[in-house]
Amino acid sequence: MARIITITSGKGGVGKTSISLNLSLSLASKGFKVCLFDADLGLANVNILTGIYPKKDLESVISGQFRLNEIIIKDYQGIDIIPGSSGVGKIADLTRTQTGTLISAFLDLEEYDYFIFDTSAGISSQVLSFCMASHEIILVATCEPTSLTDAYSMLKVLSKYEYNSPVKVIINQVKSGKAAQKAYGQLKKTVNKFLPVKLSPLGIVASDKNVRAAVISQTPFCMLFPDTIATKCIHSIAHKLMNKAGGISDMPLELFWDKCLSFLEKHHKPEKEAVSPKETVPKEAVPKETIEEKKEQDPEIKKVLSHIESKLSGLIKEVSDIKQFLKRSDASPKRVTAKALKPPEPKEISLDFESWLKKKRLAQ
Image (cartoon, rainbow, N blue to C red; front, side, top):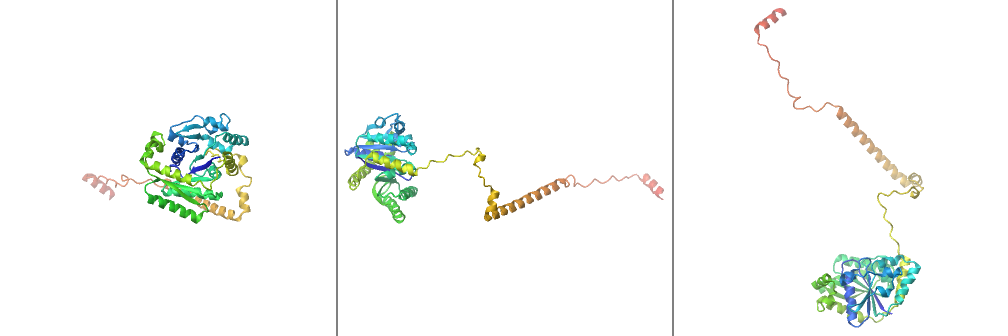
C-alpha cells in the first residue's frame, strides 16, 4: 500500500509538474520509495523536465503489448516514473477487459511509500477521476487572479462531487511572503463563504531564476541547484507533508484504480464530434414536426412569426420602391454638362447696305 497524492491545478502554466517532480525527488532523498505517474494527458511535461522520452507508455500496457514493469523508468535520481502520455486519454473509454488488465498491472508493482499523480490542468473527467479517487489532493496556484479563479473553479467541481478530504494548497512563483499570504487568504475566504471544501496551506515556492535555468537544461532544479531558494521551499513542503501523515491511511493501488474507473464510468461523457460547415443535415435527421405545425400549436410562436412576416413585407416594399426610383432616374434627361449650358453664339449681322435697301423696297 502507498500514500497516494494527486497534484493538480485549475490553470495551466502554474508550475504543477515542476513541483510534482521536485517534490517526488525531495521525498526520495529522505529515504522514501516514490513513484511519479505522469498523468498529464498528451503533454508529457515530466519528459521535458527530465530529458527522458520513453517509446512505451500506459497505452502499451492497456493494449496488452507490455507489462507495467516494462514501461516504468526505473531509478531516475532515486524515483520511478510511469509515463502516461496518450494512455491517460484511453482510460475514460476502457472496456471491462481492459479495465481488468489495467488494475491487474498495478497489482504486480512493488510497494511504494508515495505514489504521486501529476495531472493535467483543468477539470476534465480524467483529472476529476484521479482527484476523487485520492485521499490527498495538492492544489497548485499562483498569486495571479486568473490562477486563483481557476483554482476556485476546481474546488467548486470537487465539492459538487462531494469530495470531503481537506485540499492542501501550494502557492507557487511567489515574489513576497505578503503576496502569498494575501492570495491564499482570498482563496480561503471565498471557499469558506460558498463551498463546503476544507483548505489547508502546505507551503509556498519562491520565484527563482534558477528554476528556469533548470528547465532549459532539462534537469530538476532541486538536483541542479540544491542550495537555491526554490529547492529549500520544496524540502520544507516535503517535511510538512511527512509530518501531516497522521490520520491519512495508505491505499492499495488496485483500490485507487477501481474508484477512479468507477467515477469515469459514471460521469465521463464523450465529446461530440464537430460538424463540418460543408456537411448537410440528412433528411432523416429533420424532425417531422415542421415550423408550420409548431406555429399552429403555440400561439406565442404564431405571434412572433406574424411579426417577422410583417417586417419582411415592409422590407420587400421598401426594396421595390427603391427599384422604381432608380428606374425613373435612368429614364430622366441626362446630366447637363457645362458645355450644354454654354449660350449659343449670336448670328453674324450683315453690313451690306445695298442688300438692306433692296429688302426694304420689296417690303413696301
